[in-house]
Image 1 (tube, helix red, strand yellow):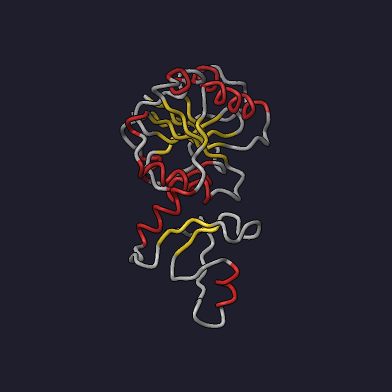
Image 2: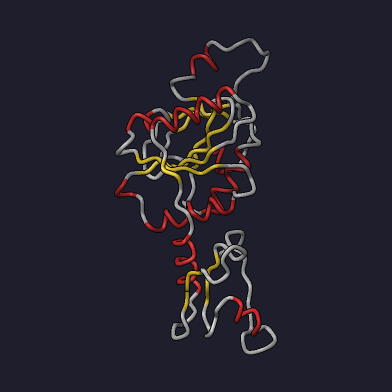
Amino acid sequence: MLENVVNIAQVYCDSSDKVVCDRFGITESKVALFQDIRGDPQNYAEIVGADQSVEAKHIFRTVLSKLPNVRQLSAEDLKTIWKDLSDNPSAEPWIVEFTTTDKDSEANQMETKRLMSLLSDENISVGKVFCDQELKACSQFYIHKHPSIAVLKSGANYELYHGRILAFDIANFAKESLTSDLQTLDPNIFEDKVTNPVPTGKPWFVDFFAPVVVSAVYETNARNPKGVAKC
């Protein structure tokens, strides 16, 4: 459950590892989270004490609760990110959760925290926009339900995720999306891209679908279409 989120180790304090336990100030059996083990080895958060049973779900939730929150983005933040992605081909992509205060469940918070850890080595940033506070920012991407996940990538392009709010699923989708030529054609760009395109000699294959219905493009994992238009 905590793969790629934190490093996991076991120390036996009643054997030759006692010197290690002494160094960290551990005097009884427990599960602890060290966030700066080199800088301050005795500064840790106790996850499970000596008189508590070790339950995986409890450890998982407690560890994630100690990790940094996903960055909350304002409309101005999103505008800056979008401009950077438009102007700079090497700009770092973003995964953005569009949600509302009442839909920001603890389970979703845990998954987005986990997502940040999974992508820490991938140069993909993770952020969150509250649509009840930043309505204009959400309407820019034609968000119809909350929560929704979007992968924002270079070239002023983005792709919406239509799966479960699970960190591993979102991470895999994002990695695949960033290697795909698939483009989301919303009303802002459809005319310029398809109806009045710059001559390239290439036709467009466009999949028209309603946001509430996952189209065959996603069901078959076909990544060949050039465009997806939300109806």
